[in-house]
Image 1 (cartoon, rainbow, N blue to C red):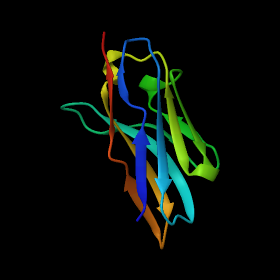
Image 2: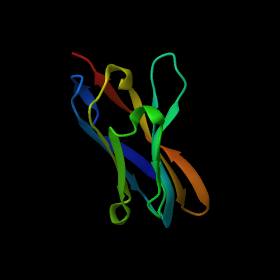
Image 3: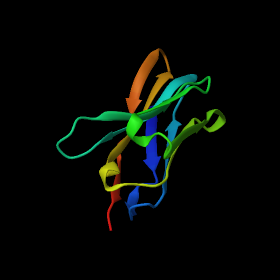
Length: 118
């Protein structure tokens, strides 16, 4: 059973920082793409940041310069360092991965709440 387990969400004041982690577990042969999506109340889920196994990264414009995605391939883990957080960053953040188990498949984490408020 392949799972993505997230951690690191919480409540933070504007201007603060949080670091999200997502670890993939199970009989995984390879992981290609890993990313973070978010969904705010009443809005569609959007891609925040993603990274390939080769190290390429992409970000939504609204977080460029503030968020950094990284991964530890040996641990099958992806991180999202979020700095200079704004109230509009408030959302449930979901980890996403494209993995090779018996075939290429996609998995989502359960989501972790990030609330930016004073």
